[in-house]
Figure (cartoon, one colour):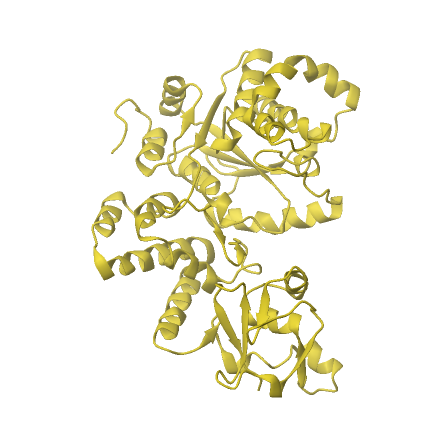
Length: 431
């Protein structure tokens, strides 16, 4: 049901699908959205080569903005990534090099093209980088221009700061400046692109309100903030976190098959909510799926997985993932979508370095990578060193530990690879 107080299609859609938690000036924003095109933005920092599914609700908010006739602005945090948002964290972010940040940004950009239409039209999405303006400020200039607009008293009252201090965890002066930088982002976008709306998660409320206040106070122009609810699963877990780690959006970080499985394994009580938030399925069709009982709910989960995977990876990848999942259900052993007897042959480079012959043994890191539980040898090594990886039921702590063909589990006829005691088991069979 839509809120009868909202007249704009944008806010009606967000309300009906469950995106709205708080709005700074709801009636004013509603009137502006009904009268013409609103440019709205969300910021994304580049701390990794891929965003994860925890960021998907924000991407979908930009998609809803465009679907209802408005202009989405994707703000990439080339500068703010160098500082680190302290919100909800007890420790400082590792500081990344400029080269790493640039590489991460290039990788992340590809995801947005799946959800938004970019171009030069009035409602086409655009992507900008806050490093273009924030890095141009001198320290004294930044302090003189904006330092007087923020009081320490108010900054200490925001949850992102207060909770950190209450837990007696140190907050560096670097991190303390993040709020100022994010607020200046809004002011810069408002001046350069007439962006009047900033959106984000509920944990960003304090930062967003600071930006809204800065635009209204300094330039006396309209500015609005809107946040989504904190997203958790029905059982109270954090959305997008699994026993194997984050659910990445880039295919080279997480395969379409595993992405499909993530949605297929949603809790029963979450299916309808996730359909409204993460798919374009019509609300009446979602209501029909929500009415399913017992074993029939599995059909709703498959529909959720199909729709979510199609949006990110395309129709063919979603169909392939579903087909492979059904083969697994029928008893065929598959690792990351590949029959297990194909996984032992080394890559072409590996074979070339071994006189053209497949390797007769594999290191633990290679077995873990081949299992599909991690996307790269580097991450496999880190996971093994950190503990929790088991091969044939035995903990392995050395990424270079070698395993010969003869060491396969006799019952499985393959190496049994697992992360954690309760994680999924993958089989890697030599050829």
